[in-house]
Image (cartoon, rainbow, N blue to C red; front, top):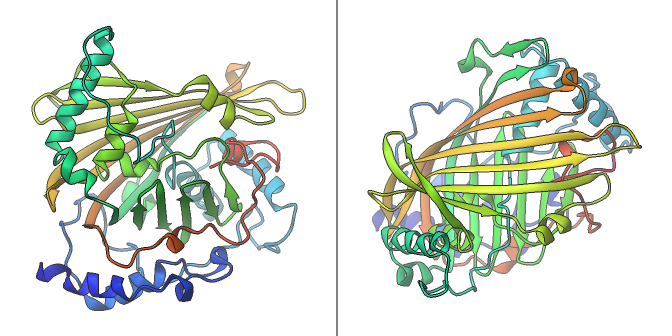
Length: 437
């Protein structure tokens, strides 16, 4: 326990009222003071970094990264210009349509926004709560696909540390490093690939806090920009440099990154209503496949105006040998209809591979992994199709549970958040009024 003495002594001194400003979007987050003091203490890491992730450019918690002036105009404009979002949306559409080269600084900024928009803080398909009891295994009058899934989840819970130990966890903290790259851009007549991935990749890091019931907060810094998002149990919000703070529409949902081997209890709850649809080898390992679909009511609640969420499906691949989740595939399809024109569809698929499971205080945590992302845009004509491929690698450096001093004040949404409902087409829409999380 000597390793964690410095960390916990810092957490006990956390004062959210002092560390949170009235405008978090323009200053340090409520966790910044904690991370700044923690870095000075020089605590050791839980794991060694993944070889794929560079040390150069990694997150420096002591630095408060202020939002950048984002937009298509390289010489900069007033960040408060109400026309900025509309200009950005039109410019973004043009960048994707022409498959930009990463050789220009403008296109590199476009890549960075795309990476943060898709991989910064994606959410799980459906709402789950830490207060919901875990269902008992039932065979009578239950379809075999459902009962098989329940049995697989029981094995997963046992392999992850057991239900009793997981129920004793009231809050959690994780810090890690990430490396992202937009690796390929494809249009109807051209494919552009990043030839020098080591130089084109963006390095950074993230910190994640969770607290029962259903509260979480994440900061991810990458390439000089920062995305932070959170949930106070009733409202999910996100802040990006180019859109500011905005609320998510629909039910409260967990952060997808927490399902990537960091929160086994929420992961098991997420697949409670899943079905076992078969088996498949993942990296030479036999796995059971569980499939979860967002229900129509949830999809409708997340849709608004020109943006309609057609489907959101999550596949979990659980090792038959260890019982642990080793692969996760997340796919959702959005239809956008603007101003009576042709409909445009966006299909986003994220494949995540979870690796290097090791126990932390008795809980099995995946200490590294990678995600492969495909963003496919298509419409009525083949010439309008575009496909963008992105990659992410991450390594977990530190994990702790039941952190003393963590309170509900640390999960308060930003003061300037817009409480109006926001739809999910924001990153790629044609107009300024369509925003997403």
